[in-house]
Length: 255
Length: 328
Image 1 (cartoon, rainbow over the protein chains, first blue to last red):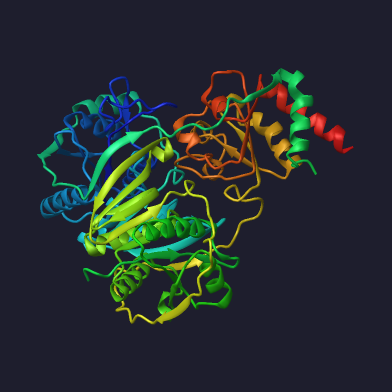
Image 2 (image 1 turned 180 degrees about the vertical axis):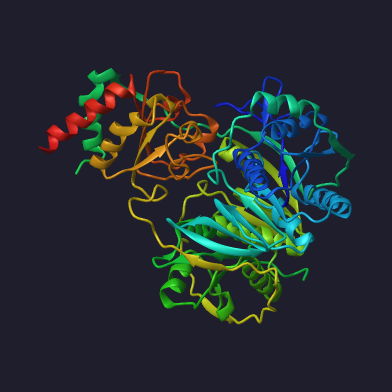
């Protein structure tokens, strides 16, 4: 199996997000970086697939030079090949990102043969755009499903399951295909120490890329206005239980 | 097509009629249509039954496009996208809107991929002037809002799941139904739902009126006993934080958050969860929040309407006992 996972470097935001002075970006100076939980699971899934079937688990990111950190994190849990499309750090839109990934996939496939499966996270945590994987699938003329929380690989097909209205809906896709997964498809492992050591030395295939102007122009970012008043403190510890009980009664949730 | 205008909203339905998320999308779409004096149309897959048409009229829909081809009955992202695109081309609308559901986002992403047009997800509001759409959209699951301008002859937008209230039009429209039977070329690329398992038992977290939440503060998988008991007494669903599912204490389908389930209960009784962005993104539309937390400065307390400052492992068992005594 030849599996590719695409990930995006994003800041680890806490409970309050601080903006840059021009209000166009998140101020990341005090923040660490990561990939989305969906993408962590996509990497884990790819590693499990090659552990079961053999093959190569490639991980690709499009981002600034520092994004190599996210590739090494993936290598630390078992990704075997790292691909970095190096940008100057500017934010790319979904169209440019998909185009650059498609170009990279075509180059890779010419050299190493086709990817049986290309995995994405269902949506990026920052932009939440839901579409890079779908655009890549169409450009490569491969079938695609999003929101997947379980997948079963067979020789030429993959059966996938996702949640729909309190139940699960099932799809079957021919390989090669593109799948956007959600957190919950697996529980990612923690990197081992030898894994981390190996990841430090893993070679990275780098290509410099440049994007084109986006159709969407950001004017500014802002923190939503909090209209809520301060919480009413019902009390401390078990002494608050009578007040809590009275509140539940008042809200009509006690039968 | 320069003088063609109009807003077309993809509507999802279930046994109960138009789903809530689509009603919110229709409200968003009507405001956008009104901003440029354009008509509002809706597209749905399936027969345009009278009840549905009336419901859509109440939200200001003038034209309903019902796609009735047999091969579109089962959901298929590519087929639905091609059929939606057919209606867009036939009507010449300049804006297409869908709810920010799994299907809404997926179908619109496929329309974007088929056309090469930009698709903007998680919108809160939008107005059109000429070929520019000024819009606000959620970022970081709603922790930030982005004001942006989309330059596109045809705008593809999905509506933030929990950012818009559904409101009927001031005056209902009399809707005209147009049937479409697109003949779709079968494609090997088409992926079609082969089966839906139906609702699993128990109270669905997404739809629960009351959710009892527990986080890392619960301390262990076994520690959830009291939370489960409280949930049962309240007829509530149990929701947990990402920390809890990552530790394997609870299955992922109980996670409330940006990468879990988005809930909109009347009451979210949440304990042992500090309130990271990831979690708050999943409970923004809770009507009332009661937080039990040892830290009065925790972000979840700031988000709550009421708070108890204390250890949930003492407060919840005491609350369970108090409710049992009341019910006895």
